[in-house]
Length: 386
Image (cartoon, rainbow, N blue to C red; front, side, top):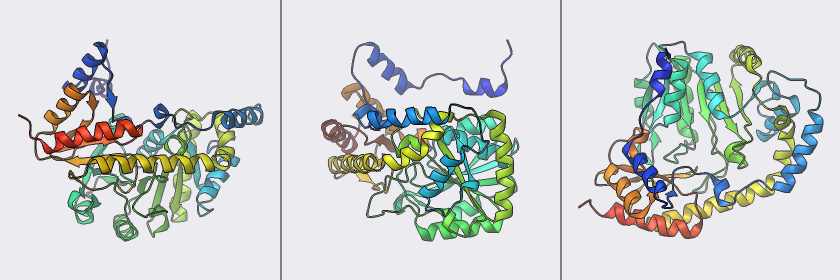
């Protein structure tokens, strides 16, 4: 039977680390997964009684099916209020999550064979979305010695005749870099010179550290066209809720053209659950106390992890759920050693296109496990493989 080249390209064998992971699981060993970063697995869930009441009310409101290609107006108004009404509801598209938002944006700007400029370190998700869209990814550097700051000169050098958009991830996954206002102003200038949109992934926007309380956003610069991507998966610990959005800002002629195309793309699928959409305003309004406690818990996890990694080489993350740790010896051997000897799963840096040698891990874990696991990671970090 014939499969498309795209499908054939998506099929591959497991890498050695995950072969070992599966062997350990089959043998009955408990593996501490410091990759997923799933807060639900650690008891961080939106209050069930509140959520149940919200969903009952939303189900009644959604009883008669009247879809809106952009998403239900009251949901978009609630999202606009999240941005202090700096982005009106008419410039917001509701999606079933950030991954689909990316797919929409890639299809909006890039024909097969054209390019999307993304940060390196990267994230495996982009490779698959790019393959499905038939577009090519190109990369700009983040500078580890400068806290993984954007190398703006390198970014500009990577722009070519086939470049169709720039992806910004801030807070960045997996380095935790948060782009500051000065960097965003320069990025906006580059986007203006080359007439390129900025796709701004802000899913970790609520989880900032280092004294930063408000995320600097390219939408508040002079960039010609910006798509702010976010959703409830990380923000309210609701990954199964499947509510995300793209908020579009910039030159109003460009915004209008983009929204017209997105309307048709979205209308083709109408993929967002109606009950979930009607729940959006109450999730925002009744989830504030939960979010405050959730953010405190994440901050405690981060502090415990960094304390346990004292003496290791790393740029402290300014946001998000992940740490990227530098090594002076082989990353694959270190990851295999942690998994084989201590049953701790972390990723070698090459999974994210990070030059050797690094380990990537999430600090989303219970406090007792953090101190044990990250203490062991620190030992491996300081010891060469023998």
